[in-house]
Image 1 (cartoon, helix red, strand yellow):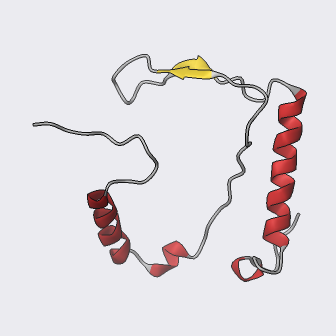
Image 2 (cartoon, rainbow, N blue to C red):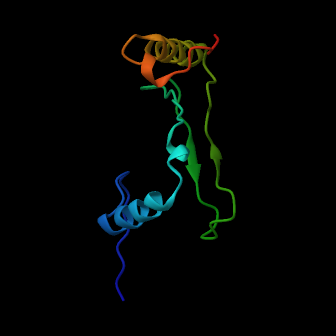
Image 3 (tube, rainbow, N blue to C red):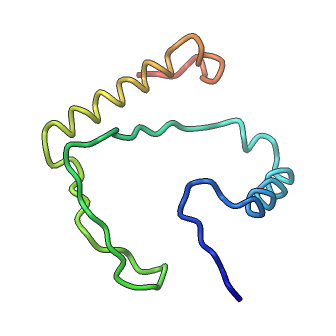
Length: 102
């Protein structure tokens, strides 16, 4: 039997159908929350990650070089500040609670 993998971020159609079926059975309140993640676009530092085993339970190895340069930290801070501005915007206000704090 031949299998094909998918490296992209969009799941194959059959996985999407299964996910939609599961989601339909869930209580609608499960979808009333959310979160926002900030990602550094084009960090100044880069690292690497490597698989040590084909066992999915085993942690990968490598050196991620997470924010080792001051410029990386500044970029991350600017990204988080940008997300704060988006969340506080009028267009986004219907998705937030009035009692959120800084």
